[in-house]
Length: 425
Image (cartoon, rainbow, N blue to C red; front, side):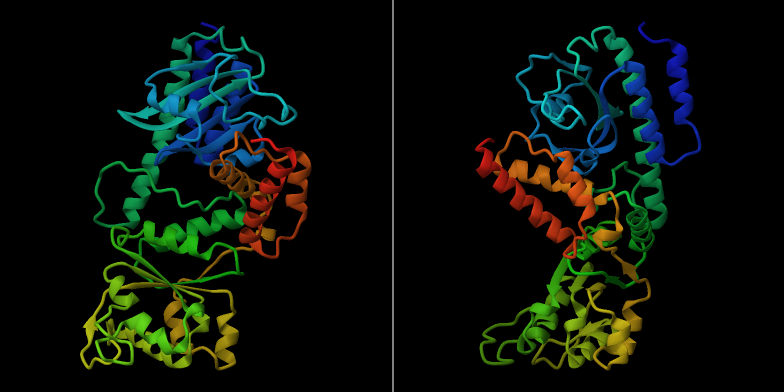
């Protein structure tokens, strides 16, 4: 054995301390990097044919924002398919997903890699990756030793996922006891503001309350709505989207409530509106502050009584719809100015959520940049897309008035320009 039983016991004890999952994962991979004397270590969660980094040590910070698809990363696909330790020699033909992502070694490729698939029973739940710039670094460790390391990591990850599932069941009465990891919603961020927002989403998702989502343009309010729907008992039913700002007044009522044949010129058949489409599910009304006062009154009636009338029809239809609404306006000011109904505002804002602007999210900008870099790499068929130290500093120093949407466009533009300048894939 290259490391003692006492070392393993110490790691196991650390994993039992009364700390949060994120801190526990970080201590695990930091300790393993020290014990195995490697240059980088990472704990990843497996979900929907991709690996999602949970904790890293020795890797660039933006790795935490990346999503590594199996199709785009042959080494990770090999790890996912394996039932045991996978060793990649220094001369492996398979590109390492972390090439260029070890700080101070951006221009060098990773030399040696070990991948450990993590299982809960027969289900793949994640992976532990260990990387070294020295080709022979892992030869001193036997497969048996590495299996013990994998067992510790798998236990920690499995327990965390099970606790998530149990907490979800407490919020969702009647859910099954089948172990299913909570779906990834691409709400990337570890800042205090985003951590608080995620907690509030978990709290309200399991209820049937209407939710008003506020925040500046480009902050990701639609992602919040998707997260609420995915965490709710209605998740098996539709999430229907409607942008109220894009609706001409002449068609807005029909879009919301539908119409019957002959209701107006061009109404050649009966048509369901968004409320009918969302029956037993969720309706997301984006930019709700743009609705006219007349439509606000009709929307209020639906929220109060749960029935709608198609345009041109005298009959009422019963619908069971949860409404999530978003706005970049201050609706309290709109109410005072007489542009938004106070009674509708109170109906919608039982549980208000606020999505923080990117300038208040600190290092989240680097994580999001990593996510968009990986998206560009896949979309453009590039071998790698790496942020330079100067690029990271610029990302952190800029104010991002257009928020996450502006960041996404900036990364895509920069990658395309860099490819055109260097001529490299």
